[in-house]
Amino acid sequence: MTPSGTGTGRIPCYGAGMAFLSNQSPRCAALLAALLLAGCAGGRDRFPSLAVRPAERAFGSAQPADAAPVPDAAQPLPASASVVQRVAALKDQAADARRTFDAARPQAARLAAAARGAAPGSEAWSVAQVALAKLDSARSQAMLAMADLDRLLVVSAQAAVEGSDSDLRLVQAAQADVNSQIADEDAAIAALRGQVAG
Image (cartoon, rainbow, N blue to C red; front, side, top):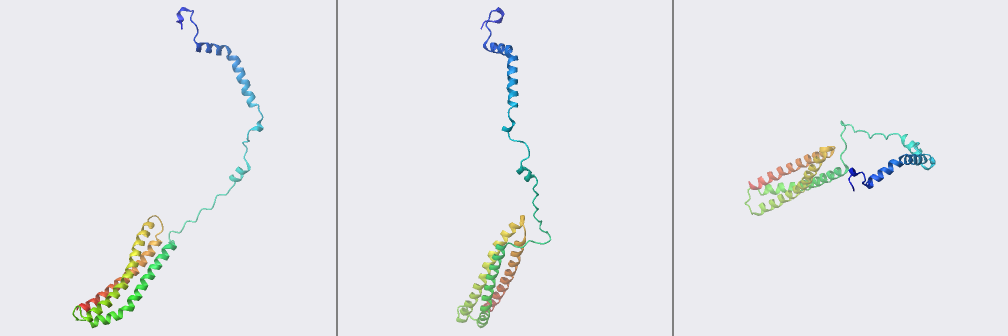
């Protein structure tokens, strides 16, 4: 490219393009306007209508759903069915253990009284120990039920943090009953052992 100072240099290629556009701009503008008008004047039936459709009209007229009733905070919710069934089964297990304990208790009391003052290892002492072992076995069944109630109490306490405490209260009541039963049986066994040891 020859410097412009000489006056004889050629116009760069982009300069030629710009010169062409500047010379042709009126005709290009007219052509562009004609194309745009032709596009706007096209048949309107080829484009979807912006009017409200029947489905939109039906959707807009739908009524809001009724809100779920809010439970009364003063009235506690019932315990869940699964927890109710599990607690009932554990209470039955403890009750069966108590019946077995009560059935074996009179004989154990008689044998413990007969072994009072008997030397360890003697026949009376050995027979009394066997009877006391039956009481221990019956009590252990109640303790198994108590252990399951303890585990259920932990789960119910965790659920009560963000939900209802109905399960927790049900488990606590059953736990208190079984704990009282075990404490009574412990006291009875300890008294009989005291007779045999004396």
